[in-house]
Length: 269
Image 1 (cartoon, rainbow, N blue to C red):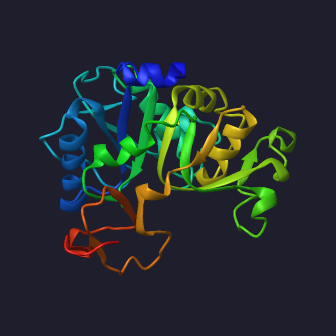
Image 2: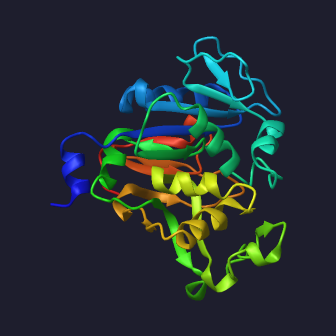
């Protein structure tokens, strides 16, 4: 048994779960509450981008990086565009660049951890979040994501060039780049440390920047297990479809309303 599996079996590997949100409404609030119920509220955190909308839920204490005095009990971390710019001189977009928010969270997080799940607001779980994430417990990779592929295998993907820096020579050559689909990811502390060290050197759209950096820094990466994903896990600008939940502990994307979900435990996927 590897040292990773031994530590896992002994309960010495700490995993946390971070829900990333920019709109607070009944749907995202319920998602966050369910994550806390399934994974333990001490292990679940929320990143909220309040650039355009304030976070005004008195039930959850908040903290932010720029505050002189911070609430150490807070699990909701607030951040905006200007704060992201202050920690990352290459930051241009809160939507496309995620490393600024992730590193602010890393610096604010009150507990030590080995792995961090990052879950976008429009990912939903058919079943129990904890049981779903446990499908990766046997994997010790530094980056887990979906639709991961290297440039030679998918040259027609349209976002390979969305890596930028102050000097072109600092960017990884295109043939060494890797892509992913970003709604749900797991990061090791090793990868997060590399992400922080690279701040201000080069950056880019998260779906090419994160996996490309992982490869450049000799971090291991692979796709999430297929049995972790539901029949709908894709990019959709319309988001006007319904999915049927059968309590199979799988992730679906994009879902932006509980009205999109049909409960049906009588049939198979």
